[in-house]
Image (cartoon, rainbow over all chains, first blue to last red):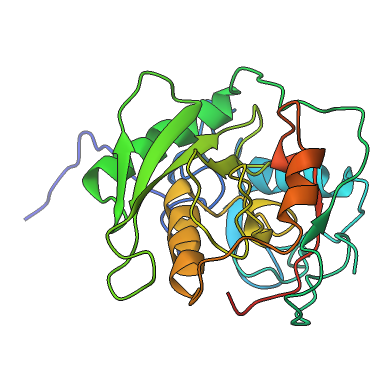
Length: 89
Length: 182
């Protein structure tokens, strides 16, 4: 039997491959976006630290910048495990 | 031992718990919450209503920026069945900045709680992390209360409280954290 396909719809879904469901800083879903953004995905990406904890890029940047601007000049730490924060290469 | 180094764990109850600096900014300035802050607080409030930490009761108000929380001393501790009130004020940039947490009068008699309600607890100041929540802070405070076996004020209570007149915020104090036993 020969089947002729007249029309088809492709549907794809995506999800971030993080161990958690929500960002530990803003508490919004990873598959959503940080409170400053409108669209999830590439516009509001996730980043991983050397310690393997992940956050919205915008959220961790706010934290790292706020730590760096403090007079005490303490090294920014991962909000989850307190290891020195380094972006995973 | 300065606040820029890691909290020292040297135990010495006779030493002063804090020293205060003359600061230009004496008051806890109340700025409206940022969008991120109010977003997160609404989530925390919702989570609290579903799953409040044991021993705590949040008094409902229409002010998201100031929470009043009742805490009951844990059974089997020197504060068993006693009720105290915590006042939690959130800064504009919460959770990038720690909330201001104090006991309302009368504050419990505790080696790390001053008679003006200020609490010497590192996570409220230098060791704050944006991954912490009101709920986790409350649990830490109850744990701090529970580990005390004596009801007494910090050794430097009078000096500190005198220095804090005019409603200075505990966040303006430079704290020394050197006693992890209580």
